[in-house]
Amino acid sequence: MKYSVLLLAFLFPMLLCSQTTVTIDSTTLTERVVATGLNVPWEILWGPDDYIWVTEKAGKVSRIDPVTGNITEILDITNLVDSGSEPGLLGMALHPDFANTPHVFLVYNYSAGWSYEERLVRYEWNGTNLVNGLTLLDNIPAGNIHNGSRLLITADEKILMTTGDTGSGNLAQNMNSLSGKLLRINLDGTVPTDNPISGSYIYTYGHRNAQGLNFGPEGKVYSSEHGAQQSDEFNLIIEGRNYGWPNVEGACNTNTEINFCNGNNVVEPLKEWSPCPAVNGIEYYNHPSIPEWENSFLMAVLGGLSGGRERISVLHMNADGTAITSEDQYFDDYGRLRDLCVNPNTGAIYFATNGPNYPSNGPNQIVEYRNLDYNPSVPVLNPTDKDQFMLVFPNPAIHMVTIQTSSSFVNHPFELISYNGQVVKKGIITSEDFQLNVQDLPVGFYYVKANNQQGTITQTLVINK
Image (tube, rainbow, N blue to C red; front, top):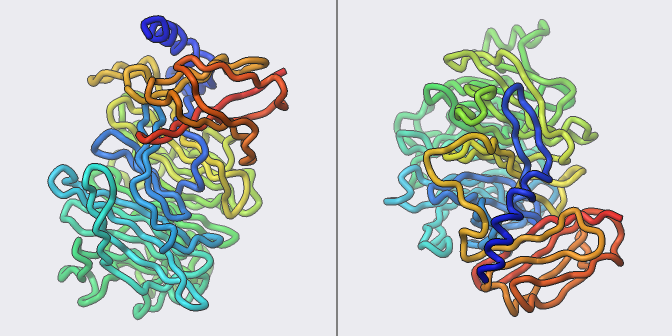
């Protein structure tokens, strides 16, 4: 094994050097595909355990080791979740004091006769799996479109939860409906006594379909929201206020909208986009690793029904977060981008792909971009520092590839899968330096998938001729 370790120590920098880079002024970011083969990842969070926590729309929750890409499934509720066009297992939040209160909050849609409903559930993390599901809020109207639903837990231990208008715009202004709202909920599922409307979960209203929610400067709360044919929005959330839908799209800039805004205390967006690019998950970035992005929001963009606008948007803010001063756009060649998170140690960003077309399809990736010149205060590990890893080289390949693994994968199965989901080769890993002939395969993108009792690792492979 000493030879293998030395070989990997030599190869790992070469593998990094062969990957895509993006230059932002004086900062260079290097690409690494962390995991491939996920089925429509909807929420990705950087966990307090330094793992990436992921929901997949069909009904699974996993933890991903960002160093090796090892995927460990920790919850499967596919039997409860109805994942139609837009419904499914959606938002997730972890308790802010996770070490002492290891609670995970999830939102999912389920069938209710001929319609959908939405449920907020709390699970407990036992160190291996999510267990003891407890329903906190149920029977929230849902639909085949426009279900929200992002979650956020505030410093005063309240859950914020976005809901969509379910395709019925008038519900967003109906104060007897939870649809088209931002809800504020106690951690036990009850209504907070200090909510703006006594006895009601409603915190803000007049939303069409907010699918981004996060904190920004000074603890302010922001959301991204889907418009119809025009006016996707980025909003600063203000307690008790009306955000206009369906009477107002974007800014109050027609006579009818101005009259409604004046009479209904409407909050206008900090920024809007027309035609709609389908804005999604948002993450505040304020890390020295990428100084050009400090005090900015990063926003995943799906590209809309027609596509062509997929990207990560960098929304630069003024000092107190009350205005967007400019927008830059990156990573526009990965297809639909659903969500993103930030490594607080290295400043690396991670985003989740969702396929090329609406309403999203797999196989999907978690992609990292990191400034390799930044020296964090904590050690940066290589895959070979872990007891569960797999590397594939050369990459791109022409004839033969070596699958280099930890001993934990020996005598376990592998598959080589094309990006259209077809298994093109499979077998058993017979040694820690396993050779695979790929010269009979067409040029294209594939991924190697290996499983054992500790989880699943995938590695992207490009075949050239």
